[in-house]
Image (cartoon, rainbow, N blue to C red; front, side, top):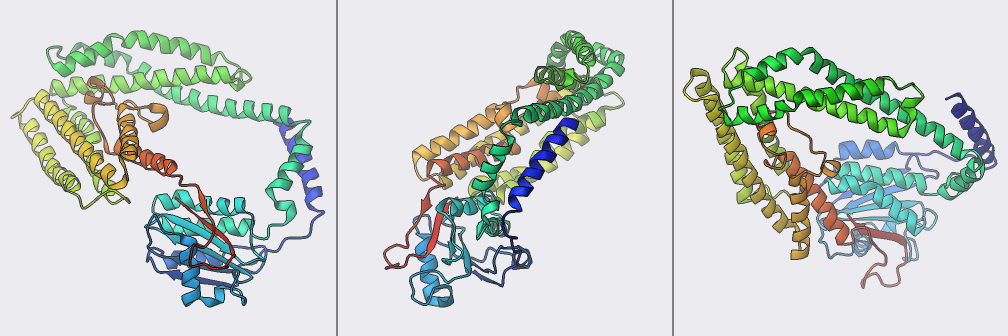
Length: 485
């Protein structure tokens, strides 16, 4: 790391020397902030203090305009129409440009458009206008209208009247020139340092899980020996246990390998993969021995059956608790029949969970029956979520091609592409007996729908920019553009 520090110091001195050749940049907050929230989507108690604190390079008036339009609208034309009718001071004296010193941020939350407009002394390049709009889009897609507006204005402040020596082009050229001879070595050192840090984190994760498994090894074997193999659930868990010692021995071998690595060895990418394999193997065993313990306690009605049963209910309870938040998101079709069915099922399930637990406690039902009921309830929830997926797809997609694209993302999410959707093993009896894709959960629904919307937005050309002010614009040629999100 000493070499890295020296390299960074040299780079800092050279670039600082180059930057010092330019004039000092001003840092001034807006001279005025005007908000015309005709869509009624902004929290001005949050927006105004945040925008008033943003620093521009030159004294700038910031205007925010929102309205509820449609996907087919030309936001540029609407902003100009509004300015002519109600804010003529936003337009230059000759009526052909935006007023000097002005920066307008416009938003249509219904038509899903965002636009940026500037006076001639504040205008930026088309690429920079796109950059400003893009800075807001991730938040706007999640209906965070106020935060998205703030993010767009902040990015505008960074680019409007930006001094030449702070421009991306200059910085890239300067750093390229300075770093050319030493970038390879510096990058190599930084990569090795980051790899070593990651390896140590993975090693700590693996050691914690491996220690838990090793400490409970005899208890795990005792628990497995008393699981009733006549039970459908017990027999499947026992099948997993039959490979437990083989996997433990594999994890032990991996443990020996990774602990034999020197600090230098932990800096190598192939060894990071090895350490991660050890951590994953130990974590899987740690989860499985908990399931073996819970299976024994629950099926045999041992002293710890109650907390074991609670752990089986936990994934289902988490899904039930997440339903309302899922239904309140944008485009979630919260007033639909399928949404009503989900809410009704949630309320009924809360009552059923209490009844099952009571019946299990007094011996009215067996643990096997309780698990069957839980499986059936989660299966029913999966069907309701699939029905609601059809509802939201029908509401959002404009044609069959978009609907097919969204269905594919939903199906991929349920199938469980770990790299894309972060699906992980559920450490429960049902999670062990049934494959990961058997139950459709609320988080999986959210992941699939979010990805589906993003895919459709990209297919619609959501990033394309619209310039010009439509048929009503006349000869107006103020700097500005809009794009969809």
